[in-house]
Length: 276
Image 1 (tube, rainbow, N blue to C red):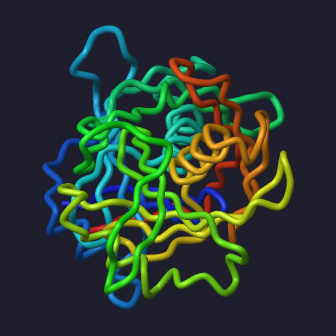
Image 2 (image 1 turned 180 degrees about the horizontal axis):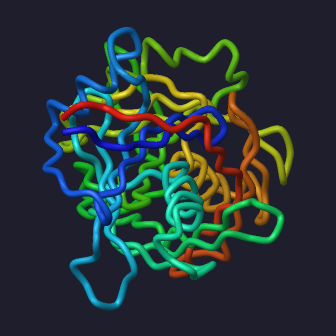
């Protein structure tokens, strides 16, 4: 059978989006791995699946597969593309939709300027909720990596993140430390690793090593996690701007117990079909 799909991106973080509301198919991890190959498939960082909701209080179910076939809990850039997709495809007439993910319920709003505002919910900071192996919650934690000690913050935005402050993201050891921290035994579900360069109280630069995908052009949940870490440690103030290789995201967070709000673009690239 042939499945229709849309290729989209949020700041260069790219996705293959499949509607399983009007189409019917059983997508497996092997399909994500096959289609995710940039030489022999469609090519993407993540595969996004739109499904009918399981919960009557939400509008859609949102599933996310990395290009290596692993299913993950959350994707912020993907969430913005999800919102634009369901509205453009007329799967809903709402401008604000509630979506259930493996990492919890999020709220998406397509604004008049074409930007998408995402209520990512409150960050999770208790180590067991991230999950991260630590005796108690702290602003930062020392981690032994390849004979050196790395100081990092640990935050969950529905998916786990480690945030490391660096002097310069251009020279940061993203491809050396990223994969080692991603698979560190203290992160039992692996972790996304953000390298944060603070420019001033309202601006920062960020590169992210994503579990299952490697370094990407942008990471929405990574930008949210970096903002939370920076605000908690007194480096930055809300609202703030995070500059990623693919572009800029606006982040707001009022502090513990409050949701993280993210605003950024979502772009449709092309339509296609794949054989299942």
